[in-house]
Each structure stands twice: as C-alpha cells, then as structure tokens.
Image 1 (cartoon, rainbow, N blue to C red):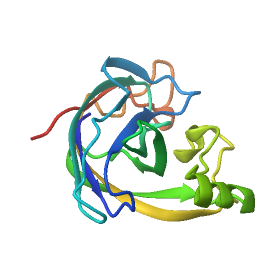
Image 2 (cartoon, rainbow, N blue to C red):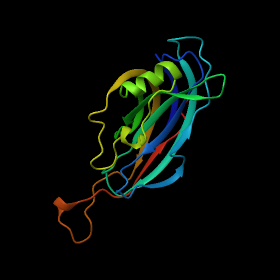
Image 3 (cartoon, one colour):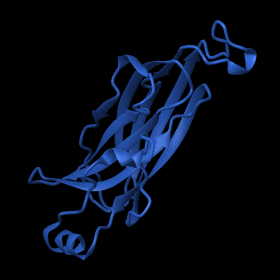
Length: 196
C-alpha cells in the first residue's frame, strides 16, 4: 500500500496540528506485515489561521501478505494540536476502509470528537481538556463486537489521503481436496507507499 497523508482542513485549532495514524486489520485474521510501517505520526504543521489547510505530505509504505479478504485493513487517524506550551489536545478521530481495487485513490476522512457528559464539557470549556477515548481501537472497529454506537460526538475537520493499492496473486484457487465452491484466496501482497 503506497500513499501519502496529504494534510487536513476545517479544524477549529489555529495551528500546531499533527496526525497519528495506524493501519488496522482484524486481530483474529492471519494478516502478516511483510515490510514498512503500520503506524506512525506526521510532523507538526503550523497553520496560518482557523479554517486554513494544513500540509503534512507524510509518506506511507506498508506491505502485507494475506490468506483471505477477511479482515481487509482500515486506516485510523487521530488529529492532535500542540500548543506553545508543548501540550497536546485531541482534535479528531477518523477512519477509512482501504480500497480493495488496485489503483490510485483519493480519500477524504471525516473526523469527529467525543462530546462527553456535562463534567467533560465543563473541563473542556474551563481547562481546555477535551474528552478522548480510553481505547481508540474502536474508531475503526476491527474487532468483532466493537462499535461506536451510543457515543455522543460532533464533527471536526477532514484529513486528506492518497493511496495506491497494488495487489499481486489476487485470484481464486481451490485448496487441495476441496470443491470449487470452497475455494479460497491465496496470499496477496498489498502495498501502500509515497505518491508524489
């Protein structure tokens, strides 16, 4: 999987935005990382003011081998803001499904922040401490039974991603001693890396 986290827009925070990212696969599936990184963090971008676009141009280069299409990866992003005192504040969570078709894909990831209850809202207003998730893995809900259902949240900004998916050996072949209807997909190499 080749790609670039291009940047972001429409966040309320005026400057100091950066993005933590992770390529999440279903934990119970046999996805293997062949090379590259599956998580990382962009540099801090100094925006010009509210509503202007932030630019990261952070490269992604990940290679996977998979035994089946089950558990196809999703990319989870967390956007944070760093102030002059070096403290970090959550600006948004988001995710996207990695496309299954080969080729170049432009993806816009809409982000959101949890609102919390009255106590969290007061802390956010007076102390600048925004609520965040204890376990951010539910953002991409890759585990069976996980869901964001019931979370109170509000929209945040948008993260822009450009991904090129390259597949190899993606064809249906039957396992030995199986019928045609029980065919499985052999190992597939999925690549994500920097696109200029």
